[in-house]
Length: 130
Image 1 (tube, rainbow, N blue to C red):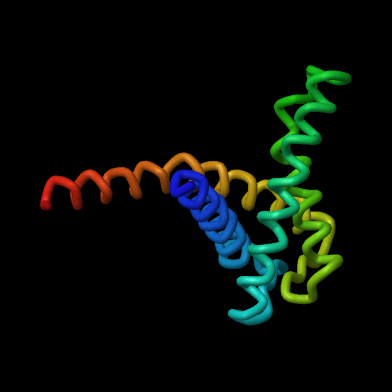
Image 2: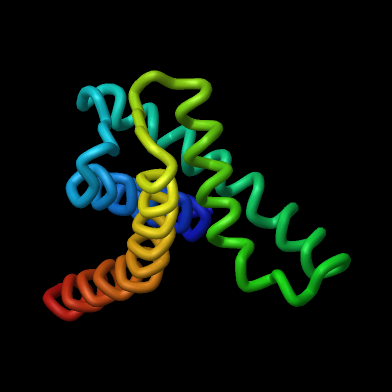
């Protein structure tokens, strides 16, 4: 149970880092308020978590050559659905959509790899100090 909770928190944290990076790097990506940020992260992460396994399964079965693009596609779809259901995330322009998808995907992927290492290192350090 605790493992699942930590995993979910790390997933939401990596989504938050990815969205913050896009907001900071790209001028035409705007998260309107701090409250909107939490809503945007929640919606984005849930849509991503639901879509990714489904799209991966369908792609692997019917178009295995496209499996590598699943992450990019689901990131784009999650961004699109988030902007449609919430006014807290604004992405203007086709080029910005492309770069926002790429930045959020890349930073979220890196955060998903690195955040667990940071948490694990901190847990080990705390354990040794006890």
